[in-house]
Structure formats: C-alpha cells, structure tokens
Length: 533
Image (cartoon, rainbow, N blue to C red; front, side):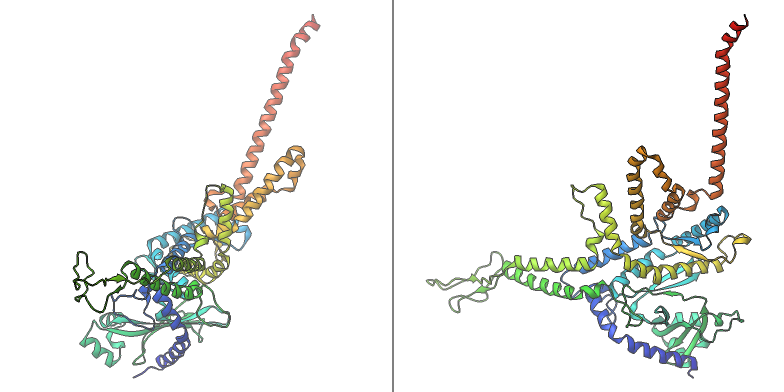
C-alpha cells in the first residue's frame, strides 16, 4: 500500500523532472564532447562501452581537466591552508587564549579533511562544475574517518532553490542492488512486490529516491531525528513506499553553480556552454581535415576502363597486369586539398576553446625578457580575472562545506572544550587559498610601493614617517598574507616585549651615565690632587 508522504514526494519529483528536461540535452552534448566518461544523461550506455566515437580532437577535454586541476590547487589544496576561522568579536581575535583554541580547531578540521576522501571527491566536483555548470556533493558523518564526501552525478540529481536563490532541495534518483537495500532498510520496510523481487534476484539493481528538503512543520521543542531543519526521506518511487525518514541539522549537500542566470532556477552554466559551438565545429573540421589528409597520403586512383586486369593491387610490391601495347596508366587523383588552411582554422578554434576554459590565464607565458616584478604583476592580473567565479564558489561551495564539516565534528565532540568566556561566540570564515591571496596581493604591492617612495623622503625629512602607523601596517599585512596565529605574537606578548626592551634600554642608559661619571671623576682626580698640594 502506498504511503501518503511517498506520493507527495513522487509528485514533486515528477515536477522537478519536467523542469530539468531542457537542461538534459545540453548536458548530454557537453558530456559527449568534453567528459565522455559521464555521457549517461539522456543516452544510457552499457558499462565499458566506447564513449569517444564523436571526438576527433581532445582540446576541450584537456582544457577542462587543466581548469579543474588548477581550481583544486588554487582553492582547496592540502599542501597549504585554504581557510581560517575568525571571531566576529575583534577583542577575541587579539586574545591569545581564544586564538590558540581556534587554531586547534582549524588543525582538527584539516586532519579530518586529510583522513577522508575529500581530495578525490572535490576534484570531481570541480570537473562537474566546469563541464555541466552545476555540481552536487553529499557530506555525511562517518564512524571510521569522521567525514565522508561523495560527488554525485548531475544526471541523478534534481535541484530547486529558496527565495534567496540558494539550493535548498535535492532529490537524488539512484539504483542499488536488492541485497544492499534489504541490508540498509530492512525487509519489513519494503513493499511486498519489492520483497519478492529481491528474494528472486538479490543482485539486480532497483531504483530508489533520496529526498532532502526544508521541513515546514519543524517543532523546536522536539530533539529527534525526524524533527531536524532538513528532512531526509528514502522512498520507492514505483510502489510509493517510504523506506526511512530522518533529518539533518543543515543541508548535507553543497551545490555550486559556475554562472547562473537570474531567471533560471536550480542549475547553472559553465565554460563548456560558452565553447560548445567551437568544440563541435573543431571536431567536424578535424574529421574533414583527416579525410583530406588520407586522400593525399593514399589518394584515389584513376584507372582506365579497359586494358587492366582487376582487382587493382595498391599494396607494396603489388603487380597489376595491363594489355601489351596500350599507353593507359593508373594515376592518382589530385584533389587539390589545402591542408595549411584547414590547420590554421583549427588552431583558431583551439585558441577560442582554451580561452573559454581560462587556459591562457592559468598558464603564464614567461619570456626571457620578463623581469620577476613583471611576472608577479601579470600573475596577479590573471588571478583577478577569476574573481567573479571565486565569489560564487565561496558562497555556494566553500562556506557550506566548511560549516557542515565544523558542525559534524562539533557534534562528535572532536574539538577541545572551549573556555567559558568563548562559548556561543560567532565565527567567520576567512579564505586564505593561493587564489584568494593573489587577489589580495594588490594591497601588499601598494604597501610596498608606499614604503619605497617614503624611504628617500624620510632621509631628508624623517617626520614624514609620522603619517605611518607601522603597527597597523604589520597587522594588515599579517591578515592579507594569512599568517597563522601560532606564528604571530599576541597583543599582551607584544606589550611585554616592548616593556622589557624599554627597561633594558633604561638600564643601559643608566649604566652608560654611571660609566661616564666614573670616567669624568677619574680624569678629574689628578687635578684635584694637584690643587690640594
């Protein structure tokens, strides 16, 4: 018998399927030419089947792989810090105890990322993002590794947004073996039909749906898994039966979009959309050019209609017999192909594709005549071109990912106990990835230029340095460069050092004065003795 909740969710899924239909044709074309290993949107293929029959040039494939790898290295590389936590209260950020506790929290989070499968899954997320324009990652707690990440194929997921334009509802339609369904949900939760099918063939794949959506009837007085901010329901779409119902405190999915139109709901667009005409044109041009080259290397033959014994043998050392006394010969057909023109047109399309995937921004062409300063400036300019993309990724990917990870570890009591005065304090996320630092590098350059210009002037008129608050400059540079708290002294430590330094200078001055007085007394002693005589 069908469940009322499952029927309601199935109706919503049907509505989301109709809304996504127009996107699926785009995704299938992009997958065919850019990411053939995921070309299972509208055209279902057998596992292991050939998927590159339409591809004659791999420029788009390589460009997409380069961009995804570059984003991984510039935004979430594990070789360097890519985020840090800050207090919203400025007085806590200058407190040494509060900063050390927050530093320990960051270290625990980085260790959790390194132990989990985050690196492989986030790279897959970037690849989906720059190809399909929309990526979906599921973040869940794990007993063994604390956190588990899984990037879902866009063909499985149906998305919709809230009134603020953020994805808050995800329906995932997937398949599981019957034996796994029985083990996870229990045989008694399944419909009679599904039970019989599983008993008959436990390894056959069955279709299920996982729906995650904001719970409207939330009761803040109940602390149960069925009363969370986001509902989590697994159900059988064929029999309309709910298999399990629970919830999440926050949305377990992060669903970034590369670019998004204001009038389109749920899904985004990517560089693959921009370059798809060039990609299709390039593949067609390469196909024609290859055929033209084949005709030049192995041209068609002009054979007289009389005088030769068929078949004509074109293999090495082949013998062809003709009637004695005739002048007819086998000649190649000159097709007059202009290969250089075709290759030049192909290079134009390749350059357009690379530009759409930011390859010319990611790979800096450095000549021997370029100075180190010019290289740094050009790198900064190219990094700033990715600024709009970075802003959306921070809002729709990095921030939900970090918040979800922090909450999972906090609920698992992985963090040390915070001091009493720090509890229930709000935190902010600061991004310190190489890309974020490169975009803020202009502030460092401005500071450096200011000090360089004031240097010669200060030698003539030292009072110009009164305009500079060197403590403020140092604090600003520490913040921009993302220097960790363990490498920076607290305000109290700085005051203690300055007081000790002032005391030492005072002692040195007093000792110097005593030495000068003793020396003066020693010099005056002979004179006093002479006067006394």
